[in-house]
Image 1 (spheres, rainbow, N blue to C red):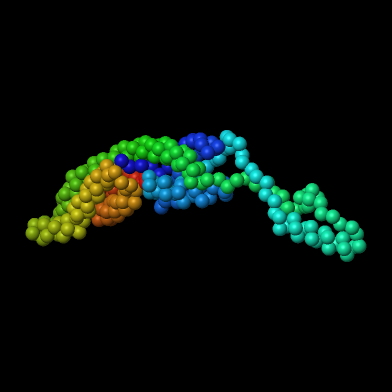
Image 2 (image 1 turned 90 degrees about the vertical axis):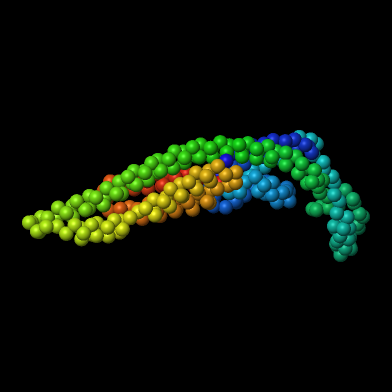
Length: 292
């Protein structure tokens, strides 16, 4: 089942004193590019997030937004830098001696000096937090993948409709092709008759000339390849794996073959049908760019 590269998914989970919201947004991209936006202290989780996404997504530019909200008591502790406090105390004592002033250590004065005392949050257990994160991410991925598949099915139906129209155009060209040679032979007969008047026509030479013309404008091989590419394209739409790149290649091949038909056919009616086919192929090309 084909999937679109565009999609959105949202998930929530709670635990470890936090409520976590994850949002996924994706747009078209030639390869898989994952951009993760989360607070710096949680950056070690980034690779785990990428691996989980890569298990279910193969193409697209995916932006991942993670929002952490505290739900429990924030655990903080007081940190005293004893080395800095001792250094301050010695420096003040040396200054007092230089100034011939009395000095006595004062703990309360020392703790008011810069960097002696700091309030810090306890380091979080990222392994435990990953359990919360993975639940929210898997929920977001499920919604994200579902949306992509729904959009992919809509694209698939549209592509099949356009492929069927191209197949019908190919049949019209196949019917018209032998008539082109007949028209050429008849016009050639009339022109020779006008030039030679009463002189009898050489039917063998006329037939040979018509055969050379038929060989020169023959588009049988191109039509066979077009039919083959259409069959491969339709079959690929039913494959379970991502087929966007393969369909992009087949679209290029369809365009190449129909261009050859247009240049060789030498017929107004076929040329008009070729223009219609090229229009459908261009619409297919635009749609294929959206497929994973």
